[in-house]
Image (cartoon, rainbow, N blue to C red; front, side, top):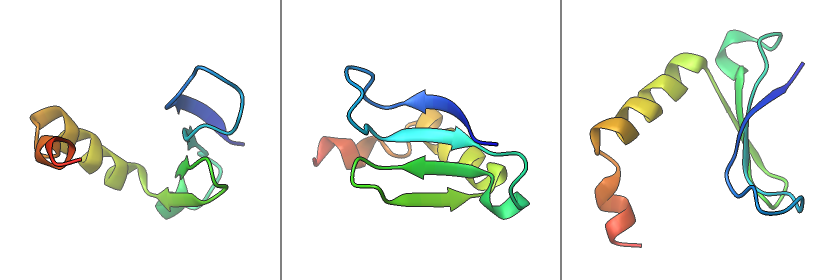
Length: 67
C-alpha cells in the first residue's frame, strides 16, 4: 500500500510531484517519486537515503545554482 510522505508543491490538487513509500513492494522499488506528467521513478529506500544525504550535505546545491 502506497503512503504519501511528501508533496512537492502542496498548493493545489493537480498532480504535483509526490514521494511515496510502499513497504509491500519489492525492496528495490519501495520508494516512488511521481511527477506531474504521470511518470514515476522507483528505487530502494537505501538509494533514496543516498539522495537525501547528498541533499543534506549540499552536494546537489551546484545543480540548483545553474538552473
